[in-house]
Length: 125
Image (tube, rainbow, N blue to C red; front, top):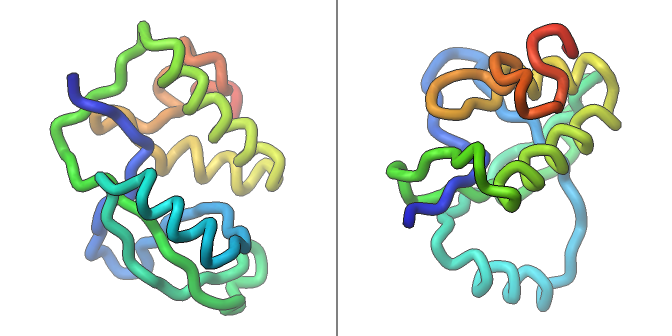
């Protein structure tokens, strides 16, 4: 059964970006993460503050190497994961949350199009 992730995919449009949360970790933890998430690729990229757009450093961005995964609306694990991500995005403010909901996709549709997920939907932005 294919696994599903809220994935990062390339976007060649000028000004394209991805929102995320950056956090520090030890080198040992990073090595463990690479082992645990071995099915993901990653790239190092510049990181900018969401509100000021000032560069604040660099970070590794992980991306699933699979494209055949589909979101399973009957999977408690997948529903829990997307809700955790949405709740975390909401804690960074309404602007960040709104962009997360409109720029994070399930099968080509933004999360905002799925009010049944219970994370805001079109009227919750």
